[in-house]
Length: 110
Length: 116
Image (tube, rainbow over all chains, first blue to last red; front, side, top):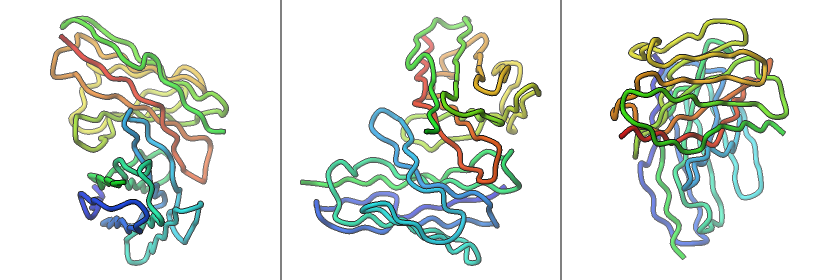
């Protein structure tokens, strides 16, 4: 099956810093989503981005499908940005579930 | 929009009993629903995929007789953990998507199951 690798596994930053999270995947995809898992376990949809670039406030994401990677940018980090960020991909059509990476654990210190 | 709910949020049961978890799409019709499991400090793993009115498709290694999935309507899927054992203790999360593309999935808040 498809493999998903996220880096870095852990990231500690000061409030106000910028960060880039990376997601590499091993095969072509028709679904790529970025999530933020909050301390209660809820997955918050950040981006649905199988290709191209999107921005939402301080967050933006880029997926280069031909090179099989996606990047999530967080600018001007806030302590509320802390948590685990997951990249998940799907292939073969909408009936396929998502394959998740192991996540990046982000800690923003005040 | 695109809200998915789960009930219960937390359940504790004794070994050998069965537990049912409900997943509902509140503001859209879910053509397909998915069930995932997450162990502490780990990522999410897909357990099964269900389409309304059809039998669920289980991932390799997931016992279909232990994890019964019913997708009775376009807004409701249930997961029943039968004869639960302590090793079934985990965080169970459902997701749903409408008729796509796009194939974006929306996730419920999860159910934390503890088997004693």
